[in-house]
Length: 401
Image 1 (tube, rainbow, N blue to C red):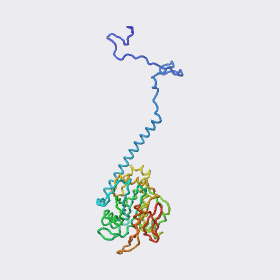
Image 2 (cartoon, rainbow, N blue to C red):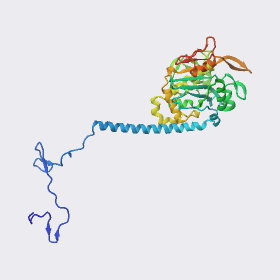
Image 3 (cartoon, rainbow, N blue to C red):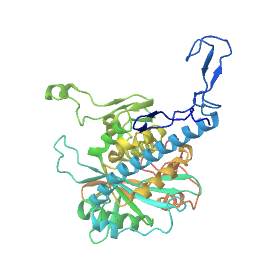
Image 4 (cartoon, helix red, strand yellow):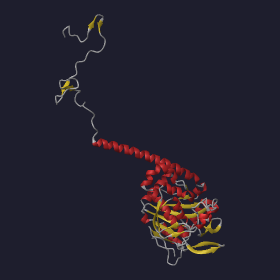
């Protein structure tokens, strides 16, 4: 380099500080010859290959990102749902009498793969009509799941059935709950039926309607029109209740909210059909419980589970853990309603000690064999009367005469 072309300037004290001047940036001519950004000679600033703009994501990469986001949302939803549900179930576990757990028969294996017997007892702590202090076992039902056959069997036990209560002699079967709570009731039912009880759930009807409202109501098929006796008047004044004729239900499929479904499950007396009794009420309760179970396992309810998980177990006192209830829901989901078995124990009307009771029939043994899968389901025998024991499959109704 000639002495006069040095890459720095020289002045009287030395050279200037700072960077060495960089060579001018190479410019690339524009294709249309228009004026460039850096001058009027048709050239533009050229920054090298690949620097013209951001590259767009490929379609495959966009799909992969979308799937990843969806998986994350599903995981968050699942965790939130389970935490809300678990909290409600733990509260339900605390509400169960500790003595009731001692009366249970331990189950071997998972609910997903082994038959399970669950005792459902409905208690009525209704706060209307002067029944605030009642401690009734208004409904008694054994639910047996059979995952291998994809079938659920519902066995109703009339509360007026005359049986022997261990240590207390002969009484109506619902007296066992009044005398000794769920533990004595389980012992009495196991002794009478021979069916071991693996789990128990006590349903408080006072909170029943809140659960139904939380899941958006239930769909029920009313087999015949009903005009009930007067109970739980919906009006606030005595004058309106005096002229009120009772609850009415038309025949056919209906969508019911919590209040109406609870009334439907409570009706014992149909003024349009005098043959209806506590036995037919138990059949309606079976249908209501089945409708609730179907609603709980529906996609709509599962989406809302993070916001209502605690309400699912609000009416319950049970030993079932959160994971066991999830297993039970999956078993119900895989069991078609058309294959469900609806059975009842029964007998003949009688009177003992001034009480109207049901004297047990010998055919109850056959019904129990149907429930546990040892024989084919059969309807009540002809001439067995309104309390005749038997079974029906799917939506078929049990005869009432």
